[in-house]
Image (tube, rainbow, N blue to C red):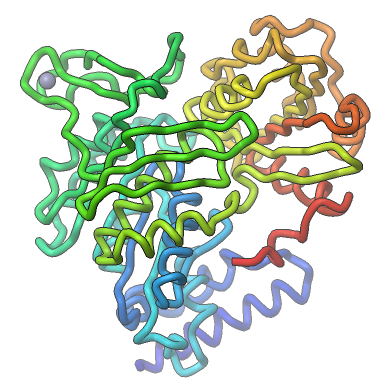
Length: 466
Ligand SMILES: [Zn+2]
């Protein structure tokens, strides 16, 4: 190992120790930033040691949950996963994860037995792929994220295409057949392609939704036509202008049952035969995450039984959808960070029978996106009639209250300044035995989760079992 790698690891580890000692939190980025300053090729050098190679998951929504599922699959298969956790999906987060597993002389622990599972930010993908050289690359979906982060989805799609065009022929691409902008990547893929998708048309959307961005054919510019629309622009699509249409998925959900209590069951057809999945997660979007993980696991060469067992062992990934029990009240947290993801959450909650109690927290920190106008593209209308109690908080609570007023909620919703006060009020408004739904943006989620944990719900995330 080069002296430079050794120096980079020492510097990174020291930065992590110092950061923790000064109470600067979990240190998911700083060690990587410091180490990469010393050796810019650190990720490449360390990732090359992974005996079973790596798999990368990217896309606007679902990468954390899908990567979490794949990490569990790797563990079930007896390969200790090396996984960047907690949504630190830029290069520095990947570098930190590798650094944590490296000894001072630059060797990864159990290197020859390990599989890398990396969730990577959409825009970071080309750089990450060049350094990590994954065996398998999973693309979940492509939606407009926070407006001010990347600009056009087209530029992301172009980066993804050139990444695939530059890949070796052995690299397997796992693509969502139901998202036309992802399915179109097959034309850029030089290696094998595995499609996953939903064939159960009963999971389709009843009414129209707002969020839809890549609705025009990349080939001829015509607007796609949908025989079945599941959410956003995800469904059974075809182009009326040219012959392009949704490919038949290799891994296909033939039946999806969304249980109102929160579980989801799927029947799935795979190249290795039929299987059934029982998820402790709710929402059609989590069915898609499970299909992506299943297709990815098969692409890595695992047998379908191991993959199923690994996926089923996953509980709600960190903060994305979590359940707490507080003074006899069930509290469920759903992260909402963009219109497409939030619409899935709103649909899932709307499907729960009975009156709803809601706490909505809208922040505009950098990690949330400074521009909050995206809330106007989310279908809060779905919950307007069923809401028995609604509390609004966060730095931009007034914007949320205004949005909800136009969605048909009462115009005098309580706007509560502090998160702790808002949570306390929301819990008081929720009778024992009933359920409270908490919908935070990213930074609000970190805060509300800490408060819920303190009130006796669960261990803080850094103690959560992997
Ligand atoms: Zn076309």
